[in-house]
Image 1 (tube, helix red, strand yellow):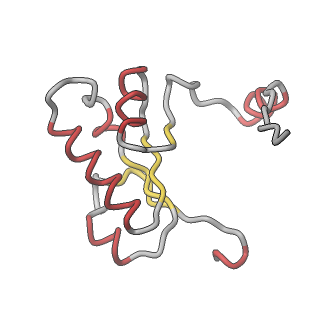
Image 2: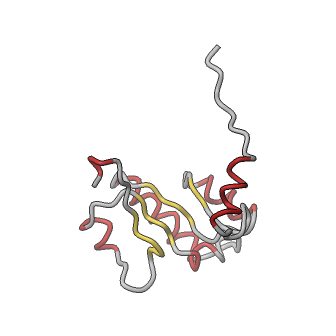
Length: 117
């Protein structure tokens, strides 16, 4: 699939049937860390902070990317940036949208590119 430009992910990682074995056994590109771990990371101290930090470090060491699901607060974003989790999704950024509304939002996005000059 990768040779055809298809990226794979594990959704809701850390819940249900997902386990640490999936990190080493499945050749996926992205781990989507379940929102249940993200919801309490603004609380200090938090066992969730330790889990999130270590999952992100393990995934990076295994050359996988991590998306933190369920981000709703800037304090969560700050923590995720501190541990070098580069991607997040959640209500902080937008609510789920129907297809047509999503396409309309995309039309209104201004893309900024780095100027090398």
